Amino acid sequence: MFKKWKEEWWEKRQNDLCSQYSSIESSLKAELEELLEKDRTAFKNSLNEIEKATIELEYKKKEIEELSKRLDERKLELLQANDELKQQLRIIEAKSSPSSVFTEAFSLGVSKTWDLLLPVMVGNIEALKKKIYEDATFEAISRLNGKKK
Image (cartoon, rainbow, N blue to C red; front, top):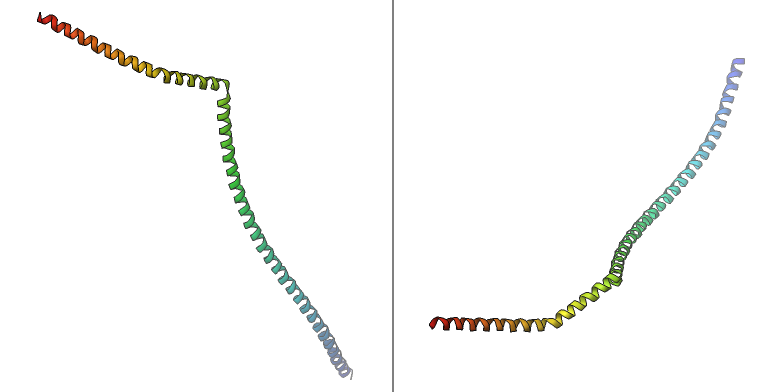
């Protein structure tokens, strides 16, 4: 009798425990499924945000590279302009220095003098050539006359 009662009690207890366990298990499974779904949704949202941020970063990176390239080109242009200005300043300074002014004035004076004296010198050289030719001619004629005598 005790054995039967024990078996009945145990079966009843087992059924109660199984039903309790089943309800707890199903509620835990439901909670876990719900949490898992929330985590999946949050993960997908995070992944989408990361993809958007990556795309935006790539766009900004390209934009920065383009701006950097334009900045480098402008820098080269400015360096060339700076070099040209330095060269022009050196030329202006060289032209405006006292020694340069004196040299330029002296060169112009010599050039002007040469231009004025050249026609006179050429005329004198031509006259001298003519005189030498005439003297040589008279001397040759006088020698020839002297031999014939």
